[in-house]
Length: 168
Length: 417
Image 1 (cartoon, rainbow over the protein chains, first blue to last red):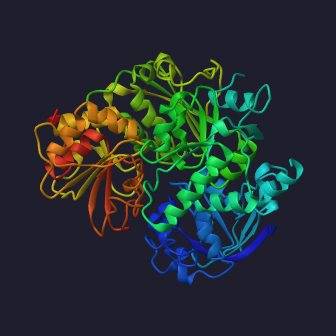
Image 2: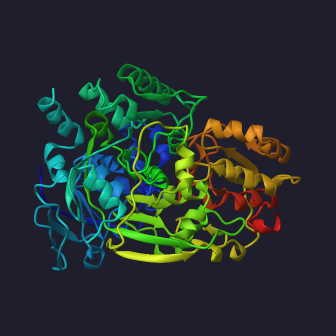
C-alpha cells in the first residue's frame, strides 16, 4: 500500500457532497463515462483537467450526503488522495473500503492554494506544502487500527477474502 | 465516569466493560442489509458469498428503484432476489415493500439496544427505536458475511428536549433548526443522543424523522431514549427480547443543549444545503414552484400525509404545480387509502405514487429539469439531488409542502389549518 504522495493540489471548498462527487443520474452511465460527471455541478470540466497523482484538498465536511460510492469516481480519475479540514463519516468509510487514501487534516485549506504542490505521509500524518513551505500534522490512523488493516489488504473485498480463508 | 448510550451499546457488542471515544473496536452487529449497490453485488459475486451470518437478520428492500426503471436495475433486482432466496434472508417483494427505513421498523426488525449497520446514509433512522445504527455501504458485504464491523467509538452530543411541538411544526423542523444554528457538520463522527421530557411528548413519526436526519448533522448514530411509545409500537411486531439502553447520569458529552420544542416554527431550508433554514414566514414570496414532493424516508409516515391532507382538504393544487405523494411503505399507502387521505389528495389533483426513494434521490419518477423549483420533504436539498444541478430544492415539512402545492409558491401552512 502506497503511503506517501506528492502532487498538485486541486482545492475545493466546504461541504463537497456526494451528489456533486457522484450524481445520482450518472449511475445510468457506463463505468468509464461516470467519473466525468464528478464535480461537474460546481466546477465544469474539472474531470478532464485533473491528472493522475493530483491531490484534492477539501474544506469542512468533505463527502457529506448519500452513501453512494463517491471515492470510486476519484479513484477512476486517478486522484492520489484527499485531504480535508474534516471528512464526512460515510465517505471516509467508503474510502477505506475501496482502499482510497483519505485523511482528516484540520487547517489544510488555510495552508495551500489551487496549483500548489503537496507532500503527504499517511503513516505519520506529515503534510508539507512544497510550494509555500507550510506544514501541518494530519490525523493519521494508527497502523494497527481496523481501517488501516483494510486499506493494507486493498479494500474490504480482499479483506473479506482473507477472512473467508481463515473461517472456511 | 459513566457511559453514553452509544458507549454502552458498543461495549456490550464487543464484550468489553467500557469503551471510550477514539478507541477502535470490532463489534457484533445485530441487523444489516443487502442492497442494490452495484459494488456490493459485485463483491457478493466475486467472493461467492452463499452464506450470511444470520439469514433472519439480513434484509433486502427494493426501494431506490422500485419497480426497476431500466434493464440494469431489473437485472440487479433479479440478482438480489435470487441471492436472498438462496441464502434464506429477508426480501421485500415489490408491492409488499417500502423504503427500508420505514419498512424495517414497521416489521419489528429494529429493537432497542441493538447495534445496526445498514447500507444507506439514512440508516441513523433506527436510532428512533433506541438502536445504535450507522451506515455501512461498501463494507456491508463484510457485515453480511461476518456479522461484525469496525467502529471508532464516537464522542456523544446530548440534546435534551422540553415542551411540545406546536401545530404544523414537525421533526423535520427540529433538525433544520439545529442545522441552521450549528451547521451540517455539527455531529461529524459523533453520536447524537436525544432525551428529556420533550422527547417523550413527541409522537413516534417525529422521532423517526429526527433520527433519520441525524446524518444531515453528520452523525454516526442518532439515538432516542426508549419509552412506552416504543414498547407499544413493538408489541405484536417482534417476539425477540430486547433491552433498552439509557445513559449514565455521569456520562460525558462533547456538547449538550436544551431545545424548547414549543418555541420552534416551520422552517424552509433554501436550496443547496439543509443548514440553509429560515422561518417559512421569511421566505420570499413570488418564487414559482413547479413540483412538490411529499414522502421519502424523512417524512413518509401516515401522520405526515394526514397533516398534508388537512391542508389540501377542499382546495386544489395550483394549476402550474404537480404534487407527488409517495408513502414510506405500501402498508402506509393502504392506511392512507383506508383513512380517505388519498381521496383528498387526488380530489385536489395530486399524483399518488407507490412507496419509492425515486424522486428524492433523482433516480427516477419526478426527476427535475433545468431550473425547475421543487419543495420537497426529502432529507436533503443539495444541487443536483433530484435531477438537473440547476434545479432548486426547498426542503420543508409536509404541511409547508402541501401549502406550497396549493399556493404555487412557498407560504405559511398555518393559514390553511
